[in-house]
Image (cartoon, rainbow, N blue to C red; front, side, top):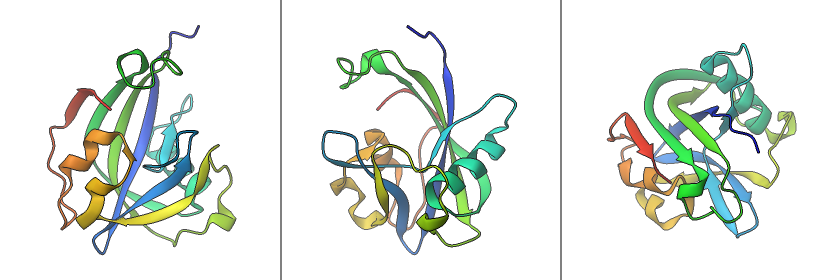
Length: 154
């Protein structure tokens, strides 16, 4: 059993009152997750975010500010029976699209990723988004009001 801590970077991309999310089926029905993924050895967060967004969205991005950090320790959450080993620290950055999303250019779409969707911030509480707690921090105007460090939450 691995005892490593994994760094992951995530992109928060908002346009016209909508947030861009990966639409996924991870075995329990449809859910939405923020584009991004694991940092590789000798790669900065910014480099990882550029790579991950191109892999999953086929788009180039501009990385802005780090606005939220959360830990995820699998054994402490609802998927503990199936996935109790991970300890991941996720860093969420505000990003802007430099090029349009084009899944035909995406080079490494994640397992379970069905596509992407622009979800309206006015209805964000209605969707099955992970991490679940992040939905509470968005306003309809796209602003984000949360403590920088959230702790071990899902």
